[in-house]
Length: 247
Length: 86
Image (cartoon, rainbow over all chains, first blue to last red; front, side, top):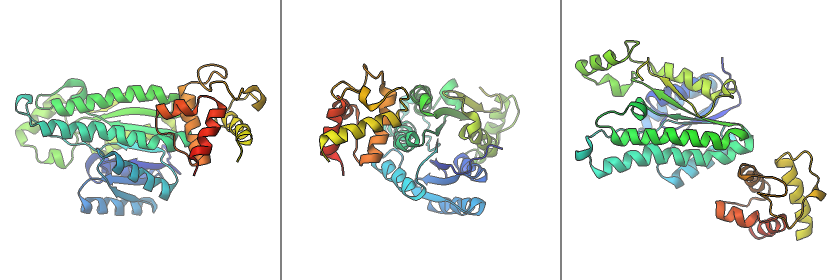
């Protein structure tokens, strides 16, 4: 079942939701997992305890992925503690939905900075360790918005579409070095974000999903574990959708 | 460390880190460009070499401009390492 024994993983935005599910699943398969988070100390503390319970190893680092120096410090800390980084899951992201005409400039800017620049910062920071290992897995969490578009999400869709193009290019740069780069696109997943949806909106979403239900974080995590494993070594530059057929 | 000894050491590091199986140190012209011609190395090889150099000598090759200067030839690389190593 895709053993990740001896691998070191960093999951950004790993204290809650899909990021947390991926972090725990990687740990279940034997990886040493460091979660990055931006603000919720309590959630990070809880996730860290769960990681420790799974395989006796865990780390949490508070850092703003849009801040280049913060990210450099974060990766240097992991390399100091765990020697290297084999797996990076670029999951950190924010949503600031608004129709474009009424969008605040800051909502455009922050979404691009955190979602897209964050992927740039984190991917760049782990390349030296990964090239040193001649092995690496970069998994970028994108969204159906990147492919389909969605009203109110020009900023989010642009950031995720940008990540998808970034994924394709970086995959071609690194293929020869034993590093794969792929995108993973969760559809509508049961998390804190979707729990608060009104029943009407919920039904509307479900009507669009051929499988007729929201996904579970663990279903996204399974796909992430496969992409993180050695078994996926001939797959790079692709997008895998875990969305019940939505796209 | 004198430049001549380092030049030989760097040739060894180049061969090892890029797994240049058919090349021996004597084949590498100390004054020829490292990339693009001669050994047939490309920009992806340069990434591996950067990581190997940084690990071995504690130097930093932060961007392409610096890389272009450092990888002008093995002799130029030796000069760069001597100047920057920690």
